[in-house]
Amino acid sequence: MIQSQLEDYFQKYYHVCYRVAFTMVKNHADAEDIAQEVLVRLLMYQPVFASQEHEKAWMLRTAMNLCKDLLKSKWRTSTVGIEMVPAAERSYFQVPCVENDDTLWALLELPERYRNALYLFYYEDYSIREIAAILEEPENTVKTNLRRGREALKQKLKKPHRIP
Image (cartoon, rainbow, N blue to C red; front, side, top):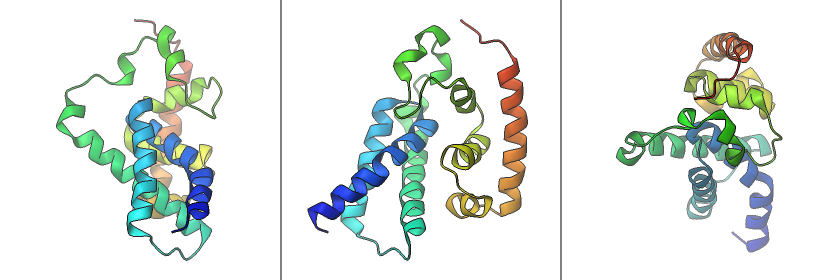
């Protein structure tokens, strides 16, 4: 893979992979590591893509799988999550390329099955069929997760923000 091609991939996908990773791991450093690891795997395996959509889906699927691996790790299971961070201190954890977005913070507190479907649908503009392919789930499951996720998100947004 030539350097300019790698630079193109970095320009196109680093921030997308970072944002997806951040929604799953809720940590800047881990999200950066995962986004970089996606590019390293691209270099190592040099997959052939059928289309630009396939290329982006591969990047996101790889990022999500790396997140799942990290979340299952012993180190990760013995640390504290972002939901324990007081709302007043969350400005440090702002997501790059997204302004102060209360909806995103509420989304980050949802269970993973709702969070992933909603994020891909609303923030990355994927269709239900594309989300089903990325998450390797039936389309009806994605539709159900979107509906239930919207309901849960609506409830979270109705509640006043807690300051522990």
